[in-house]
Image 1 (cartoon, one colour):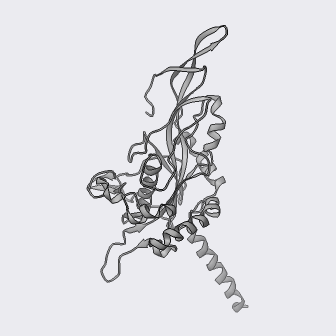
Image 2 (cartoon, one colour; image 1 turned 90 degrees about the horizontal axis):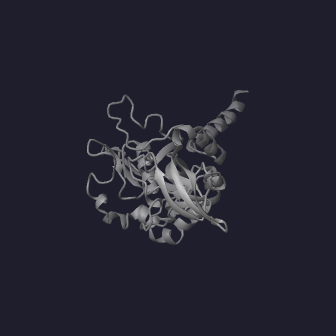
Image 3 (cartoon, helix red, strand yellow; image 1 turned 90 degrees about the vertical axis):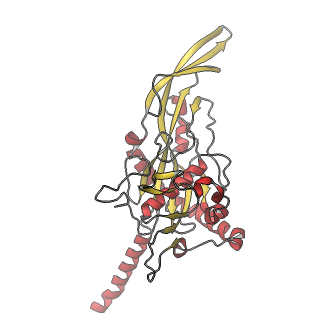
Length: 342
């Protein structure tokens, strides 16, 4: 009977290896569930002021008011991953992954060195030279959060602000941005790309995770989770700005006629007033923070417990909005009784 158990054992090991290679896989229902679990910690909803409107009819005009609220929206799901087209978000991998691989390895692939398998996406030190294995390359996608469109549907209630993003829309895919993401062109010409201390994720020089510039897939960082976080920050930095030298769709709007919305500005590293991050994988978290934590005095670094076997990482990007419901044909002015974001 013992020889008959060997195929079963081999199949079991194969399945375990397959599961480990895709350890960070997330699904749309899972993203929604994890986002919902973090609502109280990350949304930070509060009334912040009042808006004044002028409403006119055939009987005359009068001033009406509406409550102004502020809160964070889960705008984007930002994935950082090892294999081109292998987004750990299962539904996005199935729908957009193949197209991304085809585009990156087509015309651009004939001109640029585009890595396809995971082995090509990380450059490590050699054993004889005893180098640190700290030069990491990762792909990244910024996709509209599954709940983004829902915010627009309930915007008329007046207690939720419409998001700038559309659910499942690909705002950035690094495989389509091959020239900038792989060759640092023209990113290398930004001053922050070659002057140490500019746009650092962390505190330079004692404690830094890496620089936002150059906004490419290459990161020098000994801890892989921190390298992935810097890469996610770069993707968020690109899509929340207009006119960047990348292939992407900037976040604009919203366009709802039922609200006046004050959308967030560009994402800035270490500034929670511009956006915060919630890890979805490999370690689901129900809180939001900025990257760049000083972990020099801790017993375990920030990356402890956050290392993924396949090198794949996923975060929600929450961004702050203010809005008020329309109560007339013309907006007059608004008064904030507290500063938001706090």
